[in-house]
Length: 288
Image 1: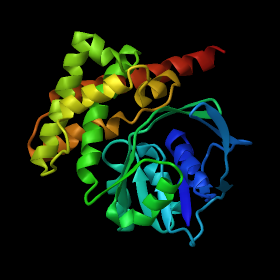
Image 2: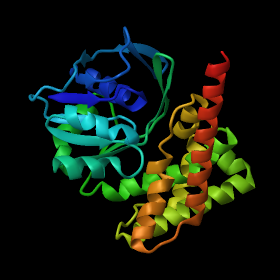
Image 3: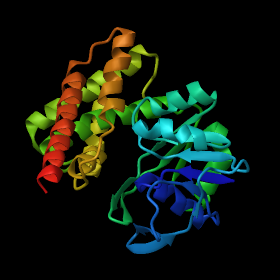
C-alpha cells in the first residue's frame, strides 16, 4: 500500500514508522546500500524496505521524500496519491501541476544521516491532511506522533518561515541552531527573515497557526545542539534547498507585491557559498 521515493533522513524515518506498524514499503532511491539503519531512542535498528525501480500500481500513497530540487526526477516513478514530505515551497506545486494530484505533509522530527545511519535527533510530529487518514493511521500505529488538519498549507508556510530563519544563518556561520539565540546579529537576521516570510504568507491569504518569529526562536531553542539540514548539505558539499526556502519566499512575495530583502540577501549568500564550495571541490579534484 505504501511507497517511498528517496531514502535520506526523512524517508528512512517514514520507513521506520511503517515497519513498526507491520509494513515493508516499496522504495525508489539512488542510495542503494546493503542495509538501512536508524538510531532511535538509543537503539539501532535495520529498516526493512523493498527496493524497486518504479513504484508498482498497487501502491496507494507515494511518500515523496527527495530533496525539493529532485522533484522532477520523482515524477516518473510516482504511483497512487503523492504525499510530499519536503522542505520549502515548490515541490508539491510542481507535482500537482504535472500530475494533477498531490497532498502536502510536514515533518517536525529532527533526523540526520551520518554515513549509513540515520539518527533521530529531536521529537516532533507529522502533520497530514484529512485526505490521508489511512496513511496517518499507519504512521501512528508505528509510534509516530501524527496530527490531522483540514488544511496543511498554513503548516507548510510556518515551517518554511522557520527554515528561512534558521537554515541559512546557521549554514553561513557554520554553527549549530543555538547560534540564532546566542548571537544577537544572527538572531536579528533570523527574526527578520521569519517576519518577511510571515508577511508573504499573509498576503497570499495563508493564516499561519503561530507567530513565525516566535516559532523560529522556539524551534532554535528546542534544537539548540542540532545542525540544520542546510548546514549539513554545505558541510557535505551538496546543493542546498535554499531556492525552495528563502528563494521561494522572495519569488512568491514578488508575485504578491511584497518585498523580502533579508530573504533575498540570505538566498544570494547561500548560493554564493554553494558556488564557492563547488569551485574548491573542482580545484581539489583537478590538483589531485
